[in-house]
Amino acid sequence: MTADAGAGAGPRRLFALGVAARSPEDDPEVAAYWAELGRLAESAGAEVAERYVQVRSEPDPHTYVGPGVVERTVQALAQAAEAGRPFDGVLLAHEVAPRVLARLGERLPVPVEDRTRLILGVFARRARSAEGRLQVELARLSYELPRLPGRRRGLSRQGGAVGMRGGAGESALELDRRRIRARIAELRHRVALLRQERAARRADRGEMPRVALVGYTNAGKTTLLGALAGRDEGGRDRLFDTLDPTVRRVRHPAFGQILAVDTVGFVRDLPPGLLEAFEATLAEVREADLLVHVVDGTSPHAPAEVEAVRAVLSRIGADTVPEVLVATHVRRPEEVAARLPGALAVDSPAGVGLEAVCRRIGQTLAAMRPEVVLDLPPGRWDLVAFARARGPVEVETAADGRLRLSARLTPADAARLRRRALGGG
Image (tube, rainbow, N blue to C red):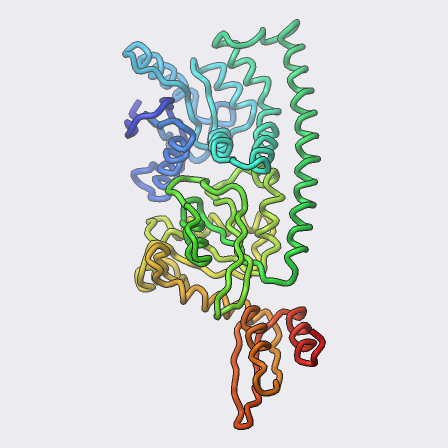
C-alpha cells in the first residue's frame, strides 16, 4: 500500500482515504481537491499525516474504498501504532452514507469521520456570534442524527459507550435520538425567528442597493470589503474565517451609497445540511441586487473555484442575481484575462484596481435603475448632492445658471428628489 506523508504537525494525526477516477498525480483537479482537504484538516486542528487514493470509477457502496483497501488500512494503522506513531482517526475524502460510516467504524480501530463532519468541525471553531453558533449546531445535529447508531457502536468498540444492542445500550440510543430531535426542533424554530429578524432588518434598510460579496473561502472577500469601505476588516489567511454576515455602508461617486455584505465562503460540494442551516445568512445573497464574486486570481484552480461557487449559488436560488467577477491578489487584468474572462483585477491592500471595481458596480446598478432627468433652478447643488449620494450623476450648467441633472436612481430615491425639487422636503 502506497501512502503519501503529510507535512507539518497537528494535535490529531489523520489517515485519509479517498476514491477518485484519476490519481492526484495525473489530474490537477483531483490534486486540488486533496490539497483543500488538507487545509480543511489543518483548520480543524488536525493534519493529514498519510493518505491513500484508490483509483476507481465510483466508491464501493458498502465500504467507500474497496474491501482490500480497508484491510490494508487496518494493517497500516496497526503498524503505525506499533512504531509509536499512532493515528488518531481515519478521514474519508467525501461524505458517505450513515451505513457506510458505521460499517467502516466497525472495521477500523480508530474513529472514522468524513469530509462533511470535518467541515462542520471547522465551522464550529469559527463561529463567534450566537447566531453563527446556533446555525452550526443545527447543521451538526442534523448530520449526526442518522449516524448515531454507528457512532455509538464505534465508541463501544473503543470502550467509550454502553452496549451495542439490547438493554441499556438500545435505551441509551433511543434517549439520545429523542434529545437530539427535540434540540433540532428547537433550533429550527430559533433559526426561523432569525430569518424573520433578518428579513425585517433588510426591509428597514430601505431602497439602498445591496451588494453581496461571495466567493470561494479565503479568496479575499473580507479584505476587499475593507478596501471598499475604507477600513481594515481584519481578513485572515484561513478557511471560513467569516461565518457571520458583515454589513457596511459604502459611498462612492460611481454608485452613490450601497450596503455591502460580506458572507460565508464556499467550497466544492458544500454540505447540504450547512446550506439549510445557514438559510438565514444566505438569504442576504439571494436577495441582493448585485453579487461581487471574488476569486483568488493567483490560485491555479481559479476557474474551477468560480464554477464551484456558481454551483452553490444555483443551489440556493441566487444564480439569477447579476454578477461582477473580481480577481484578487493581482494588479493587471492581463494576468487573469485568459483564465477568467471578464474578471477585474485588484490588489486590495495596495488599492490597485478598486476604482475599476467601483465603476463596474456603478454601471451594473445603473442599468437596473431608471434614468431621472431634472431641470433645477440655479444654485440647487443640495439636490445634486442628494442625488450623488444615491447613484451616478451627470450635471450640466446652462448660461443662466440653471442645472440639468441626469441620474440613475431607485424609484423611491427618484420620487424623493422630485419632491425636494418641488419644495416638498
